[in-house]
Image (tube, rainbow, N blue to C red; front, side):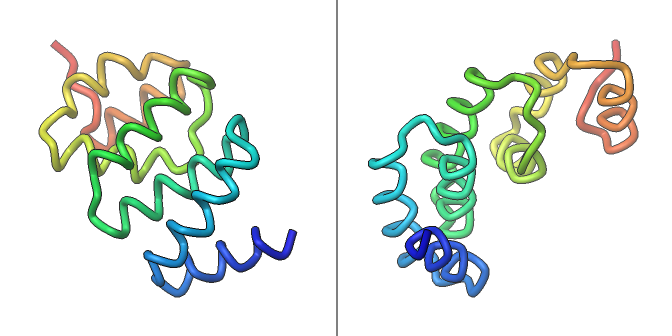
Length: 110
């Protein structure tokens, strides 16, 4: 529990190197924990390692397609990498989500 707190504190204080190290150790201990995987992805995002962050977000999305936690970070990565059309096609979860995505411009309707 202490390690989880220290990792969160490092992430919140933008100490990305420490956050990545701590969350990587936690992820090695609990590889199926979605929360830790998402926090590690955010740490990589803050370190501007978009490829590693995207990989982790995609793992979570495959495992839990309805999980919208930290989806704003994933959306930003896809926008930066010009993959927003793919994201819009893949985000057909439910009606209210589609409305939010259309309003934010994440979803292209042809």
